[in-house]
Image 1 (cartoon, rainbow, N blue to C red):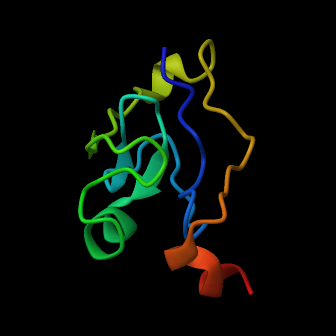
Image 2: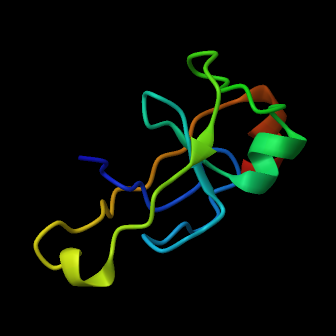
Length: 84
């Protein structure tokens, strides 16, 4: 089951469970659509895989299967200026 990370690993944009602009790779690295398209050319900077739109978990399932509240960020060179 996807853990539904709550933010973009690059720009730290909030990506709630119903976000339609969340993108994931096969390792569940999570980024917003803007970072995927503008900064990474649809290639994951962590594993080299491609991205797909993250599925939306129905609100009724979030009670039993909540999204993660642990924020993830990584020091990607193209993101460094966003965390200064």
